[in-house]
Image (cartoon, rainbow, N blue to C red; front, side, top):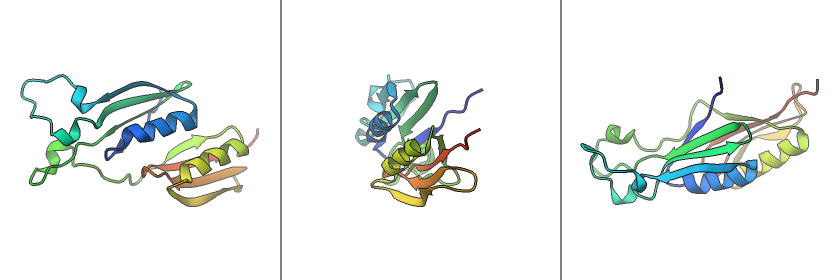
Length: 150
């Protein structure tokens, strides 16, 4: 069994995943927009503002996957429940990364915190030679951890 984080964005998913691909050394194996979806019977017309948003993206990083999409914009007067409630900032979760060593952990943490917010600075702890928490500039919360040497 493998768990794959699925991240949501408010129109900047493509930019976020281009950043993640470069930072983590991964490859985007699929990226499609809402405008590229084939029309389906009974499906309401797609708002123009939604056509360029990412419907689904899959980033492969060695044997790990990170996936995501943009949310549908909520039009004025539209019931937000009809399009998943629109974008909401992530709450109650962190995407945790296990770095190979403290230097790699610091590199990842610094890149994720740049333009975002360092919630807990990257430093040695009683359980780790390096740990830090940051919200990146896209609003995604990350924990970077270096496991203790065996």
